[in-house]
Amino acid sequence: MIKLALIYGGRSAERDVSISGAKEIEKALDKGKYLVRKYDPATDLSRLVKDATEIDCAFILLHGKYGEDGTVQGLLDLLDIPYQSSGVLGSAMSMDKHISKIVYQRAGLLTPAWVHLKKGEGFDVEKIVQEVGLPAIVKPCNQGSSVGISIVKDIDFLKKAILTAFDWDDYVIVEEFLKGREITGGVLGLDSLLCLPIVEIIPGEGYEFFDYEAKYKPGATKEICPAQIPEDIFLSAQKIAQKAHRALKLEVYSRTDMIFTNDRKIYVIETNTIPGMTPTSLFPQAAEAIGISFPELLDRLIELALEKKTRDSFRTH
Ligand SMILES: Nc1ncnc2c1ncn2[C@@H]1O[C@H](COP(=O)(O)OP(=O)(O)O)[C@@H](O)[C@H]1O
Ligand SMILES: [Mg+2]
Image (cartoon, rainbow, N blue to C red; front, top):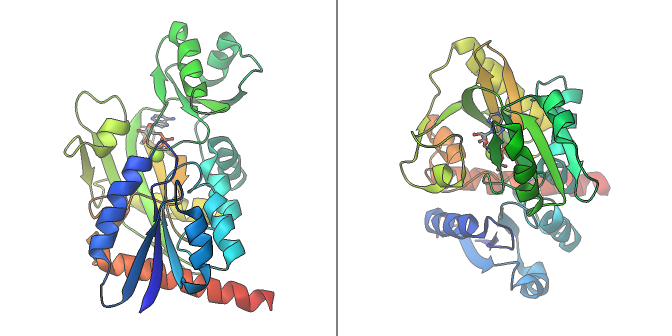
């Protein structure tokens, strides 16, 4: 039996998403293979530290700050517990929308034009619009699930949107809003990466983009897997997801969100290092499409976590 610590909940704005995901994971995990103990960093950190020597592997199902951003990964590294997500640096870089965009550019990937703002430093809306144009999309730098995001069509609303994003984070990006089709690509593996089929995301009528409600209200969004896009675009998007994964130094798995524009270009929006994990979430859906069931996917992630740990300890000795 593998003693598995399921780390869920946490303190970010995506706490509820994590709690419902953890329930699904617990249900799907093979009871004959895993002995599961649950830990919520909001209340159980000292218990986790105390139990460390009895834990074979951790499954981190935390989204956003203090979970997906490298902090919990750092704690687990110190405790010598293997886990299924990327390490400290990759997690931290991917969580920060400004840093990850710099990394994409450096890797030769397209990403929408953007401006990076720091709370308290002031900003000039006219200048921002000159750089990114309108409509623009305003995002807190370190958030997920579309929390704190607004689309701005009129310069008069830009200041308010920026201040709203600052309610969530000390850093904000204002990005060029791209018209096109939203697609997402999962990758899985360590040295050799398996690209999952690309999924197209179509928010239902009434949703301007893939916002919090569109993401989590059943039926609010159509997800088409595999995406019905030209084959060359499908393959390029898979390569881009793989390139983003490698450029950000990610491990085990990730899911990169992209926009395919009318002029046939693919722009990278962001990479999720702990993608949603209910059986109907995007990553598990894409795995299912190539015959990897949800319980099999969980097995695969845990195997990769253990393999990563063995490889890393081998290197340090
Ligand atoms: N530059 C952009 N142009 C058009 N739509 C965007 C752009 N950036 C984000 N979006 C929309 O907003 C959603 C959330 O943005 P994203 O950067 O993925 O943040 P989060 O981390 O909150 O998921 C995306 O899924 C997409 O629907
Ligand atoms: Mg996203």
